[in-house]
Image 1 (spheres, rainbow, N blue to C red):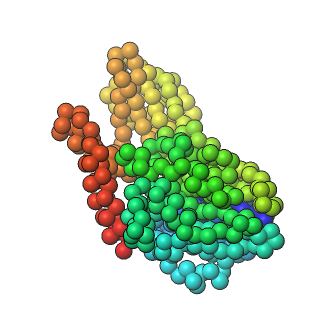
Image 2: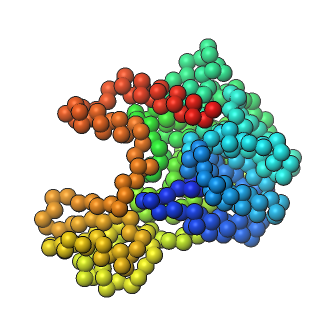
Image 3: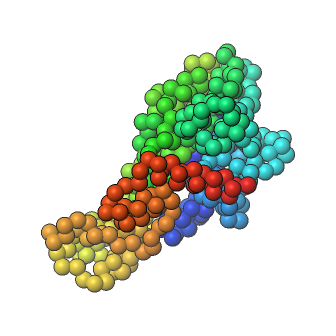
Length: 374
């Protein structure tokens, strides 16, 4: 049986105040075609379908378009909610759409949600939406659940697996040892990290949450990465979907399908004269100007050649460090925890938040997010 593993679509996301919906549409349209060409039987979507828990009408229509194309080709879908999603909205009409071959994680109830998808070979898909310790504690009040690893381990230990079956987990968490980038939400102190050995009982773990395609611990614990490059820190990523050929217990072959890139992301460096002589481009770019004497409107001039300029910097012998100018302060790139930490440092002579401060802040943020999802 052949699966396609994707995650972190972030439909509706903006990049430095630029809508990416049209780009996302082109990428998903190509991906739906690839599913047919590659004879994919089912698609695993490991969370962060939308950029926010209250997605726009346009973002929801785009996802509906993608799912409809898959269903029309008799391709099943198994999807979970991520930390950016509302688990309630993602699971809406779950019972109804199951008849169309779309299986979605429902509101978390303390254990894995499992679906047998094949008898020969025996394959079971287990779905675990994004969870935090606060989500798990209420189901296991007698257990000490403080970290994200505690939470995930508790759920897995209380969700029996069929030993002879090929068990595939769809999950949206942070695995210890994985590479990060600045477009991902992070928790201060690293308490969200989960040891990859926690997933040893599974034949394959389709991870979501981190934007770089990578395996962690072993080849079968793998992040597919995000649908597109969602920050300049992802400039050098090779975005792709993961193909799983499941032939038997212990027989899983992994390959990749590169995503369409409507607007490549790159860095452009040179003097103003050199840059103005470059060919017109709609690429998403960071401009680094190297003139010793910079004219006042240089940032505006380069947009004649690169209208999708995301970042403008000056590097010369006079600059002690890179001077950065941006069109819009992209608040989405700043996490609430980071903002609190920066404010505290500013007010306290660069003294960081203490562990107790972090613990209290984390509890408050979790409570607020839990209330928001209700």
